[in-house]
Image (cartoon, rainbow, N blue to C red; front, side, top):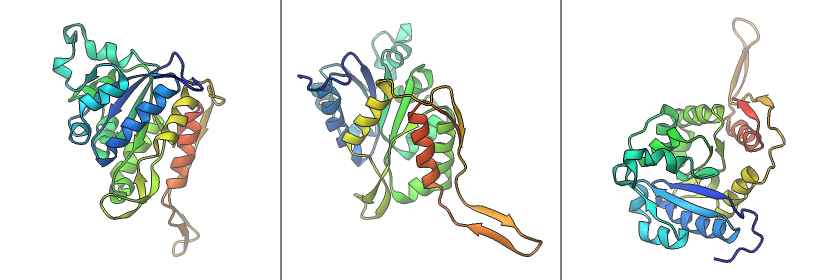
Length: 238
């Protein structure tokens, strides 16, 4: 596949494709990365295989696709560790609520979560889920945990969903994810070495024992700011 601008020439991306209807967009993301000169190796979760086939992903990657921890070639030599460290950047797209929760909890019960726990490379996640799941306190807490650990986040976007609801939770468009990948890999880390504190969410400040001043902020804007800072290399405390 010929590269046009080749902003990712010589770069290697390990793409983890999670479950969810948005998994089909991973195919377009692979095409865009390859068009920019990047190489892609892919891992598909069991949920992801319900929406895209390893064969279709392999055809676009022009490389073997991995799905099972215990069938990974060289697993006796810790093949999952080698796979996790063979790329310049690990991208999780789409990242379901379940996958984000497992990452935050440090679980390692399949190939995707095992390599995410074992990698020594930067990780970029592109969440995709129902609006209620995205705004659930558990998901918010999991995202805060991942941001504190230096994981970068792109999206989600707001709009109509496959379930018929409208709101935040749509997977960021492949072109937007590509730009986030380029930003992580082309040296645009102008905040590297900086520690930034971001406050987010509602406040409840007492005036006296009876009265108080409060706001009902969802915290989404603060999360977006924290994610943008992390993408530029800052260590973020949210």
